[in-house]
Image (cartoon, rainbow, N blue to C red; front, side, top):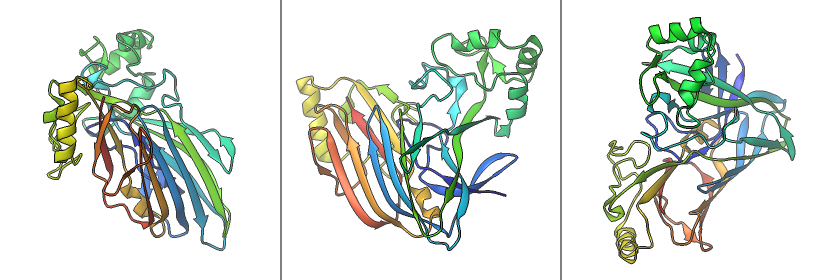
Length: 328
């Protein structure tokens, strides 16, 4: 069994499945990559930059052990319900290629190549082997009609098996995948004894959006974007306070806001799988355009520029994840 470190990631999304998670540890088995914890590696610092077009994360890790620790580092993505196609969930893959987030990693200033694991789940059952055997594990809704083009390129026997088993069915395209796609980037990393390791990541996020006729009445208890109208947790998901609602109403009257709302989600709580708290956590939120209005549950954010807000904390133990709205 190999130890695994699971990296944080921000996703501009609202999915029925988990979003990307903060650094953690785990292990790899025949059923994929799983999370666990580590008592040897401390997250000295994390700087997280979130914008609608680019996510940037800088970590400093420290191995407190008297021996090197070799781990499998994992960067998990949210599960994607491929049966929704392009139009229903209001999203698209950021880049039309295997590395569809344009995900890049540098370790101590040196670029490394991350591997990508794909797994398929159908009604909670792992069907990766069946989908891969049919040659369909790479199917994704890049553009309208993409599913049908991809299905037509599959071997006839594999296509027939997928249809027979209900893994391909009529939807946005005649042969629409019915599985949830779970993807994770991963690589092997050695942390030298008693030393720091600096890790830099960048990628292009998914964009979850919705068109709302009256943005001033968006509920803070419902997910906005890919699952419009889906009930969220009992607590306020976005902390849209009275001042923000007043700003939204005023902007709508001035017609400086359209009806487009985007959501970003970032899982922080898996940072608890590291040794101790995050030594220093620096959060930068960039709303993209000065006229945009942003709302999230993060007390103490201070405005530092026309589009940016920041917060810094020491010995930080995240108690909740980030879910923010950008009214465009």
